[in-house]
Image (cartoon, rainbow, N blue to C red; front, side, top):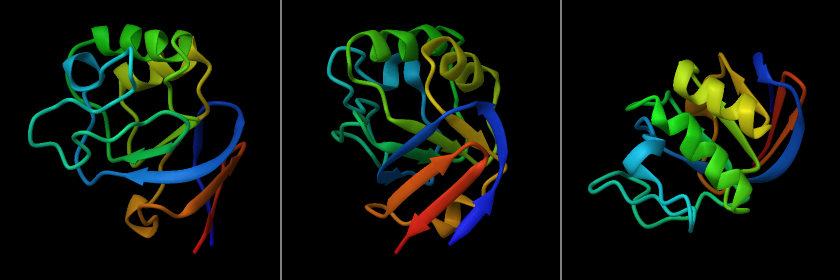
Length: 128
């Protein structure tokens, strides 16, 4: 399956999808040293985002989250790419300064956790 979205930060990536039906807060919700989701009660709590194609509706939380994304990248713990339904400012700035490929305007309900996903510019290709 192939979907077209809007480029937030241009790039190509391929990997395993880590999908959440809830927003992700990078500030306080993700450990920048380990890449593990730490937010209590979050569907991805305890899972690592390192090297994954991180799929979630939108970000949430403080603007410091953009810097946390940058720390994740510098620590080698960042996702390979981000796919959003609607990318908001915190995630957009974080993806840009961290050079993490990011696409939004995607129907994330069509992406299953564990699927192989490839991002090529504004195209999201999902292998079932």
